[in-house]
Image (tube, rainbow, N blue to C red; front, side, top):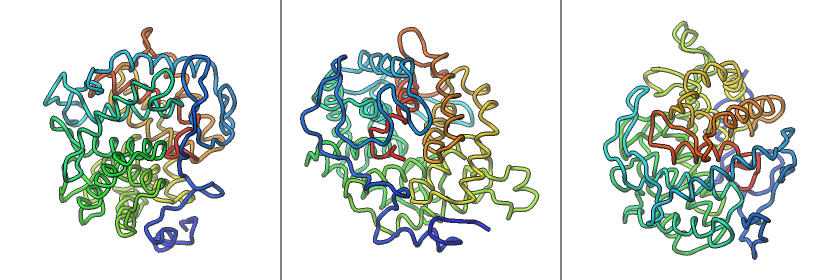
Amino acid sequence: MTKTSQGGGFQGRLAGLFGGLFLLSPGAAPLVASIPGPAEPTPSGGAVVAVAQSDSSSRGTSFGVRITEEQEAATEKGLRWLADHQNEDGSWTGNIGYKLNDRYRSTRDGDGHVGVTSLAGIAFLAGGHLPGRGLHGRTLDKCIDYVLSCVNDDGYISRGGTRMYSHAFSTLFLAEVYGMSHREDVRIRLQRAIDFIVAVQNDEGGWRYEPLARDSDMSIVVCQVLALRAARNIGIRVPKSTVDKAIRYVVDSAVTGSGGQRDAWIGLGTFSYQRQARSRTTFPLTAAGVTALNGLGIYSDDLIDRGIDFLNAEMGRFNHQYGMNGHYFFWYGHYYGVQAMYTKGGSDWENYFKEIRSFLLRHQQSDGRWRNGVGPGEAFSTAMACLILEIPYDFLPIFHR
């Protein structure tokens, strides 16, 4: 029988979501970022973020994983590479386009990419840096200004043809910025961006690459879920109906065996790319499904346990297939994988993080970047690598356990 944190079955999952409020992890304090006071400079000129941490600290431990000097040095080297490659307008360059099976088709090259820019901004925040203060304060200020300039009147965050992935990453970034600064100009645009996500949710309960699409896919759904969660953490209204529909979509996307032999062939414990098609399941999609459930307030469930088991079994093969050339599958797979494992904790988390950390440290380039052989470019991959390494720092509310 499926077990949930709020009782059995689908209704039990919904019972934990009331009045538009997301559940918090068991025993956790409210996931609301504090407004920092004057930042204490670090020896490197950075800043300490004034948000509550758990048991993680510089060169300390994070739920059984020691944060190493090599990890911190690699992260800061990656952030320095990003800072050195920021455009004057505050953006980072990325190939705007879309995935085509396991390839990436660019529709516009050499311009600022608001989704990549937002991921870079989140990486600086997750590394303990603050807007306007310390080593990377000016970098963050310019980044925030650029993202705000991309918020359209209807709330859609897009420029140069970027789509719903970028909208979600940008909304998440603005939520974390608002939680730290309480800037009114950020709040206004953030609320518009959240209202846009709510408005374009389709009848399936999900989202797709373009607004108002009739179908959905898990890789887009998880992005919107985390944006909604981050916004709700800092007091932005999210309707309960939006959350309920998203839960139904994610739960229905899980491969549970109800589909008979076809489900067994696809792989129990995985999550499908698209619900109605049972088209394919992968490491990234399963990581996305587990992280989406966590973001929607479900922390203890057979769907999560089976998903974690699948990730454990497939990680080595996945890294070999997609990690060697820094394929975009590798980066977004582990961006969600690290969040899923961090929330799960225990030996699953410890074994996972030690393996992915070792892989990232071995494959960082001498100038601080990480490769992206297929995808939007190396600002994207470097931001993702930094974020994966930074999750156990526990600085940002969206990444709290």
